[in-house]
Image 1 (cartoon, one colour):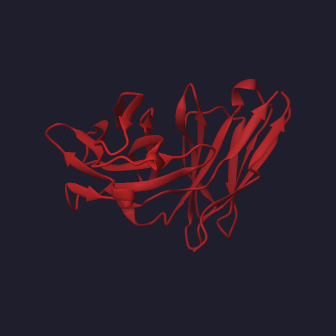
Image 2: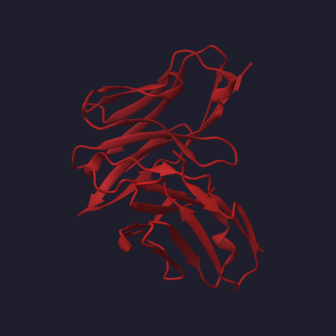
Length: 115
Length: 115
């Protein structure tokens, strides 16, 4: 079974621009979560989508948004980029309905650099 | 709120020596705990998970972890380190808000294996 895929793997943008990252979950998984990883803040939860609905959201400004499509693929968007948005953005997928033991499987990440 | 603390941001061991990476959790409900490993420029790979079925959990690559409620700990061990184990290791706890879920990660432990 194919794993979680993320595109693109690397992105370079300038301040003020916007960016869209894409994530394709494991086949059969309906939940997609996004995390930001930085050296200073570590791994932080952004949001979770399940069946095209945002089910949970972390403590990030409104510039960070996402959506999920009917095939469970998800995109996240960051508008008005700031230098501090430079990070590795990780997507994780899970079945989403198996309760508290539901396991998240991660993609390789998208490395975003903001200049 | 649930949280995890990883003691020791850097751990060095000699090849063939015991690996011990420490994780303590804080949770007001029975926790579901995970260990992930991250190799350079890659996403997170699941090593093992605790879901209350057994206190000693065996994972991939010879790793195991023991859940100790009295000590609120979930330390990761491997009897004999291999050069390929050099990576960053993250302990995580799964938390829920209604049906939504998210992983809260520790700050990570960088494992160096010396020849």
